[in-house]
Image (cartoon, rainbow, N blue to C red; front, side, top):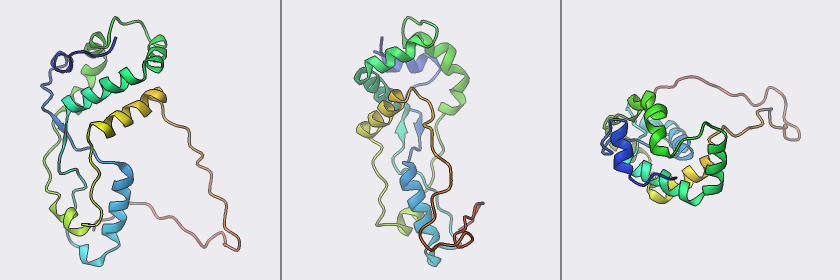
Length: 173
């Protein structure tokens, strides 16, 4: 069955539900990094790419519960691939307890530099609708990584092999 009592589930693993997480969409994050680094006026400052309104664990668990209720067939198929549990609350003690340290509140960061540097790129809301959509996707994929084709993209007509380079590493802005 699905989680009926989110506060009870959180208490089972020693949490209150008031713990918060700084969740941001990865596509916003990558766009924000490029936008900040592309402007020389932004050099020399620190940018915390966090959400100005962190999401509570209670809201995360509530969204997960809603997603489970919207995807019962897939959720039940996932359950048939694991040892039978009477309900998800019973799984919390054994499955989630080792991850408790990840559920502690994220630090509060001042993201005013980020908001000042990219005012035309507001951070999307990490509201219930967004969280449910993310959990439904994860459930449909059975919480497995999607397989990606990592082979190089075909070169455009006339493009030389050395013409395009990719640079990786850590950059301080």
